[in-house]
Image (cartoon, rainbow, N blue to C red):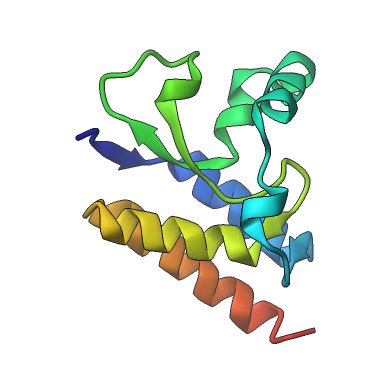
Length: 118
């Protein structure tokens, strides 16, 4: 099983997006999460650093400039999705990646406090 570290730059980026109101409170993450084409288009336009900023987990021992390095995406490359943070919490919890789970949970709490059902 892969091991993950928390991507602190992504946590900071997510916090900033939440604070600026760039959030989607109600979405079906299974339908709106970026597919391979959307990921590739974003990478072509923005590069690896910006791509990494959308992923809460970094795969330990994976090469930096690979998709395999980046895990637990929390948005659609323009906004944070509440459903994506829930998915991150669930997946990280399910596979016992406690640090990523807690980071995603704290971000979800921040989002819910900043945007209570608006």
